[in-house]
Structure formats: C-alpha cells, structure tokens
Image 1: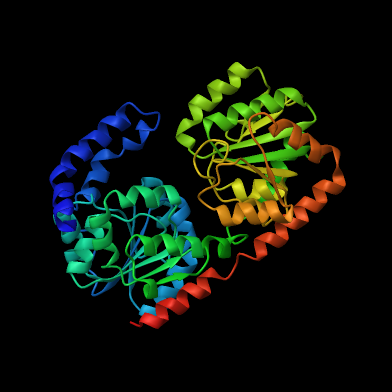
Image 2: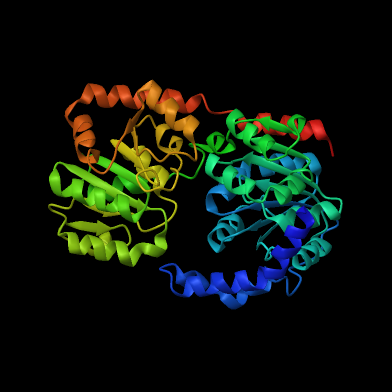
Length: 424
C-alpha cells in the first residue's frame, strides 16, 4: 500500500508543481520566481553542476534556519567521513546562505521530489549518506536514496503533534519511509515518541536536543553597527523592544503598542522580507513615525521616531543583543513560534504568544524560570510597559532567560556520538 501511494504521488507530481507556480504568481512572495529559468535547471536536474565527486555526503536543509543550524555539525561530519558535502535546500534563500559557507562543497536547490529526478541527482553526485535536517521529509528523496543503498539519517528531527496527526493520514507510506531511515536524532523525548508512533524503530530514534542552540552567539556580530545606528537615530539611551521573525498580525499589535507609549521604541524584523512593501504601507498608514534600516542614512529628522524596520538579513542577533526586551514572532500568529533562545542567550526577557508548538520545551522552560513572558494581542503593550517601569523585574527576567539558554546546549556532541555508533 505504501508503494502504491508513492506511485500516486509521482503520478500527480507535475500537476502539484504547476499549482505551486500558479500560487506564487498570485502571492506576495511571487518575486521568488524572478530566477525561474536558473532554478528550473537545478529543480529538474537538467545539467551537471561541476565535477562529479568520487563520493559525497548529501545534506538536505529546508531553508536559511536549517542551513545555519547544521554548519557546525556539517564540519564534524565532513571530517568524520572524509568526503565532499553536497547540500540541497528547498528555498533560494537557503541556498544563497549555504553558498557563503566553505564547509559545503556544493549548494543547490533540491530536485523536484519525483522519483526519476531524484535518481538522476543521485546518479551524478553519488552520495553514500543522506542527512535530512529537521522536518523536510520528502518521500521520493528517501525512497530513491534507500533503493541506491544510501544510509539515511534525520538530524535535529522536529515533528509537531499537528504534523504527526497529518502523517498518520498516510500511515502506510509513512511507515514505509520510516523503515528506510537508518537513524533519527530528535530534538526532544516527546518528538522521539512521535517518530516511533509513526513506525520508526524504537532502538533507532534518539533524543539529542536541538543543534541550533549550540550555535547561539556564534553568528557574525553586527553589534557595533547596531550601536552606531541607534546613536544616529537618537535611540542610544532608549528602552527598545526588538521584535524578531514577525508576521503581519503581530506587526499590527506592535504598531498599536508604539502608538500607546512614546517612551518605548520598537524594532520590527519581519520573518519574510518579501513582505517589505506591504509592511512599509502598513507603517505609513498607521501614522506612527518610523524609519527603515535600508534608508536611515538618507533621513535627517528622527525626532519622535518609534519604529525601526529591519529590512535586511543578518542583523537580528545583534539587535537582540542591544535590546531591552525581545519579542519572538510566529507565536501570536499561529505559526508555532520561532527561535526563542536566539534572544534568551543574550539575557533578555523573551515575550511570546501562546502558539509555541514548534518548540514547547523551550517556551515552557522560559515561562517556568521567569525568563519568558506570555503575551497576546490585548496585553502586549502593558506587559512591555511593566518591564519598562520595573528595572528590577527587567534584570531578573533577563538573567533567568540567560541561565535557561545554557541548559539547552550540547546537542551537536550527542548527535555525533549517534553518528559514530553507526560507523562509516
């Protein structure tokens, strides 16, 4: 039955691909198709890309966050296996991030998940191992790799309760795929149990922690540039709430808070920069004075400026470090929450909403220790003001968040021990 479902997926794959293209043409993110001709050559494996390696390690990471999270582990795997690394990503942004990292010998967009195309990719790059990062489990990628004798591993495995329920709707196919995976390193024991419930062998699934947390504080810092920016716009002594990875619903809440209290400044760092025009339009219509990171050098009058739009990548960590308080998005919006520890590591109070199902262990640990503050559309402004008005509470929350972040490190070493257990 599992193979029959896989056959049907391949049969309808061309129609699904066409549907995605149509969707993008009517989506705010349609500019992602601007390099369509170039991308198609990689998606459909239309030509070889460089010299054919003798043997390679294939790592698949969905996008920017997954690529960054696996950099340290990739270096250790490269040393352990002694082979080149070919990395594929689901997004152009992920690929562009990988191209800047010397640990990856090749960085490509993943082939369309159609069995013949994946087989063609494998035939050229001849990977001996496939490491899938987090949750991007593509059926044909797994099935074709297993058919070619490739050892398959899932590292930093993430699987929400919601996703597990959806997978169970295709139980025969999921059980088939789970049986082809050599081992799984899950982020938590709870996630480990979900993989087992889907058919993964209990003795091949390990709870190793989240390797993303081992990279906290290791990204290139732009702290000096942020300090200069805040000085230029007159925020050097301000109380600043940095709002990272935000979505539209959350930005409306932030704008409302900025209208309410002129003593608190806000940085908005959106999750998807393709939405920049829409965000700028919303800010202009709000009547709140704002400036954008890309244009502040052209501005002259910053008096009364309450919002800074961080419309460039690579700045969020430095903004978190210079913040008074941090809000992490995707949590008031129903997106499951983004990386809470990315802010906590700098000993800052972390505000977030109730939708934190992507990383419930981290969210609950922050709430229990006092380093996290639960907010919603109604109390976001008042909770921020509480921290502004109570310096002792602000310092106590920040210290608790910093201590909490340290307790989540060590996943990379635990993952490597599992890798060594299965040998070369």
